[in-house]
Image (spheres, protein in one colour):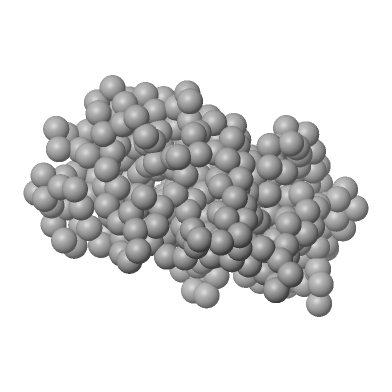
Length: 385
Ligand SMILES: *Cc1c(COP(=O)(O)O)cnc(C)c1O
């Protein structure tokens, strides 16, 4: 059954403008060539498309197109950034700082390196779910080579002060990697200003296709990223493999659309998100996780105190949302992100993530408020017996 989709933080539909562009690069009458073919028209046209996409992505984040390395998504970008920097050092000469709130695509590569003998510090956030510059500063050692933190948390939408932390890392000559999968198109990202050395991007979180992403690698810095996929030397040796023209055109077009409408879109989404909260707040005994922190416009992670989130979700058949992060949906473990923010197991189990996006309407919001109200009332009256 098609329901109201409020799970934009898990993935987004591909924008129709993006679909239109992508289809031009597939069929026999399209520009299907291999961008690495240097000897004929087919290759040249594909290469031109890939380079235009590179410009579009670079422009969105204030980077130079030579700083964009194509990948298969933010998971690969994170792996490339973290392992690619760490492998420049012997394990006993490299300390890595990250946080307990990171996506598994950051935590797992860091824990893999820890297993290999690298020193690792996993920072805990403050009660609002923010990693402060002070927390990073206090964890620094003379062997700290890499700090990896997300810009926007996927579960709560809480925004980290990456600008300040970037400056700190720059002053100390430490590589700073930012997982921006949830931040692109939602908060301003300007590589001219920030002390960010590496930044991960995913297309499917911002109305592009799944299976494609990018890693921004700052040119004028000492950061060397060693390849994790070898063969052919594409992407200046950092990431081999035939470039997926249609996918990259998709990411490029998605970036261009964001460039054009990000400001108005963010304002519209924030308003819808606030309307949703105002409707749900009336139920009482509910709170927003990360309430006192700056948050991204689309996210609304609500704790329905005393209710079981899974049971509530079952009662919300006409609303597509997540409990915890999408990647954890297969398990009934309480969200490690919410727990790290200080929530009890019970409150974490009582929390649901609503995420609003480009195609959400005010009618959708009203329908969801009604459904949530009905489901909450019926659970509450059931628990009274
Ligand atoms: C979705 C997401 C990822 C993974 O991105 P993929 O492109 O799906 O590999 C990584 N980090 C964050 C914060 C995400 O939200």
